[in-house]
Length: 159
Image (cartoon, rainbow, N blue to C red):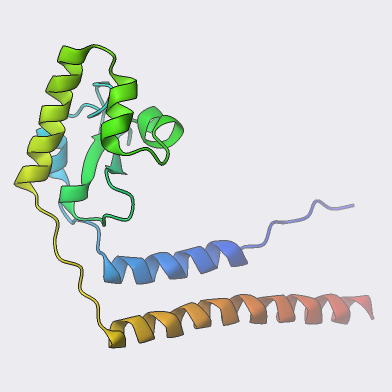
């Protein structure tokens, strides 16, 4: 028996949603200032990071706070993905950096970053919300139609 190939439909739906999100809240085009401000080190643990090895991640300091530079800090893979999770940057830093003097230095650096990069205003309107709702319905319809097509193909090969 052949191994089951995972469906690409959920990945396609995620890509469609990300495309919409990128229009609504575009990622910064230039993240050099982020790397420079944090001296190519994780804002939380201080681990040196390499751009060439794609070690640095942009951590959203405030969940739901947007993609503008003022909501991003440089983070290593462990801090960004494995450890911080849903914690705020402040409570995570408190847990991560036990030494109070070092924590104070790191906190000041993060706060200085936020102060020099105020968040941009989120633009929304009823028209924007209506189009977003239509797009979400299209994404769901795409998934439904793919399931319908999959069943049709299954039925056709069974007969």
